[in-house]
Amino acid sequence: MIYDLRPPELSVVGLAEALRNFATEYQARHGLVVACHLDTAEAGLAPMQELAVYRVMQEALQNTHKHAHAGHVELVWQRTPAGRQLHCTDDGVGFDLVKAARQPACVGLLSMRERAELVGGTLQVRSVQGEGTSVTIHVPLPREDARV
Image 1 (cartoon, helix red, strand yellow):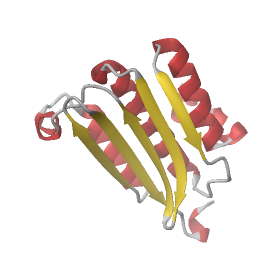
Image 2: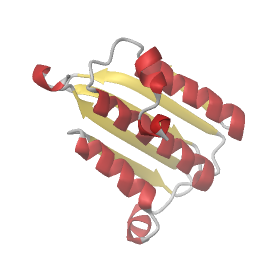
Image 3: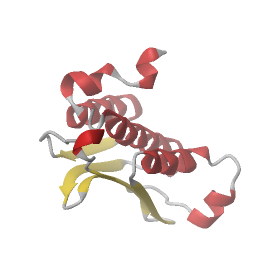
């Protein structure tokens, strides 16, 4: 149970490699093609921020497999002028965001947004029916005194 709270891999290999390892495992397990374009430089994020990014990626991939019926997913982890961001884009069936937000069982989208906001970040979800979905989490770099 403790490994579910914070995967040790985040501390051992770092966030970028943990993202890559999960994506590779997910690809093998579910038959999706997951292309990873990951900046492997030290992210400079606080541990809770790293965990939020990792969990958002997990949920985005799970949604891709469960709902999107996608064949290809692209993960891009990169620096921005204000912090770091992860894009997860699939070529699936897409969905109606307004309709999905009204569903009481739509916990995944809500949990991703809450995770991002809890660490000072933002989450954007874009989807077009028939054209796929893109999930982007942006996380600002923490202040020096908050990295501990």
